[in-house]
Image: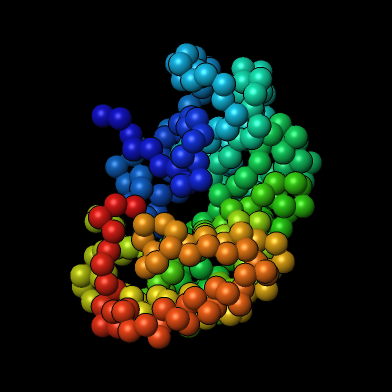
Length: 290
């Protein structure tokens, strides 16, 4: 059976190389991406064979995404070797992107981060999820806010871009305000170049879905999600960030550039809240796929 393959929406036109299979952590209560996958890290010879197969019909490749979860956790020497091989085989290569965690960034020195950037590693996709430590503990994220914020700061100082994801509704109705406030504070400290807001969805087979069914996790209503997002946006003080909330999980698609479009985005959210179209009693329609 072939393992599932996940990539960020922005990587739709990239060559996806599954150099790792699954996630080395794989214990977040809300994530069902790799539940049935036993984690395996391909050896360098295996990666060479993968490249042989993938590049046979690939044409001129400019963009590569290294899957699966947290590829940056590999030892520096292995990452450097993978990037060197990509640069050797792909003369048109412009950039390589991958998923990362705060702890994986923390394990690399500043010199190592700069060396990876020089080898055309460009963007690290990091799931902050929430700036609220209590929420992260409840969902078993396995990362501290301070570690993730410092990781984003160090990576960007080394020339890398941070694409940070947050999950609306992750604190449930009980911690929606704390989630909005603390997440905005963390983002203000990190100053990511790219920011995506997704809505948490109880994925079948996850602990979060079981908590929803048991009534121990009360989902934020459709209206509440927009209120939460507005509270977050109102507190954001970002100096150069592209914001998107256009994932299938979002109530409506939104896009803005901070700080230029902050007031426009707030006006859009206010208009949506005043429209009377949002479900204030339930989470509303949930996507059939993520």
